[in-house]
Image (cartoon, rainbow, N blue to C red; front, side):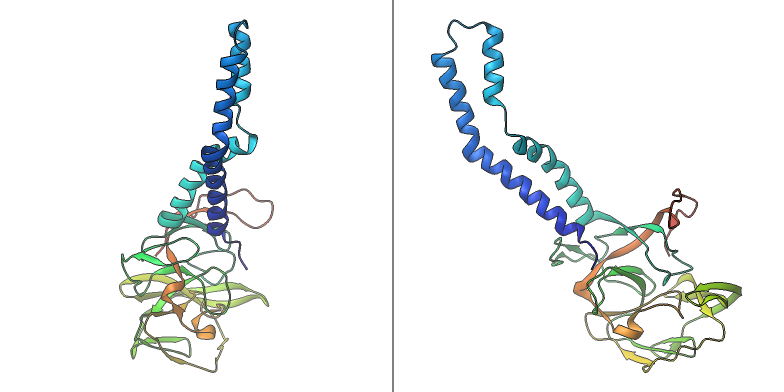
Length: 279
């Protein structure tokens, strides 16, 4: 399971806020009273410097309160930005090659498909629905982890994928051959082909492994209401809706919009050569 940073942030913001509130309501007044008692009974006859030092000591907040008050606004801003605006993700697998490579750092628009509560995911405000061709981050039905794939089927669509050909509502999706390529797989380097696919006016690259026809037990799917059919651009090496079914609308995280950094695995410096808009 991936670390839920939204949950971590919510807990940290809540903890800092509770500490600050308890201090404001119950503890701070004791410091104020101690200062008032000192000034009324012990300050007389002392130098101005001595009085200032004593008052400063009596007004000193506990260290946990200082940290809570310092971190609360910062953590709150980060929580708002990550939950409602833009959140960074790193691509861990090659299922979206050639569009996204392992090690790409991407930005995900969190409000593209509606404003949602952090952690709970409850939609507060509708903005827009996913469209065919969008690259979307979501939580799949079979595991509590973030996935990224391309939206292929909308609610009510009939999707068929057979012999490396994709049909949406009975229409063959345009896919033009670009060139022969070499594809890295778990079995080593294999011959493959690069294609240019167009879905809903969105042009993007896909790739297939030559001579591999991964036949699944099912080739046709009817997408239920409130669900979306997702596929990776690395068509012969992607775990997607062809295996675990359509994605529920409530499990949408956001739309991937840009690559802002890339880092190869291991002790390699990050690179900005792949910075680009995702399409």
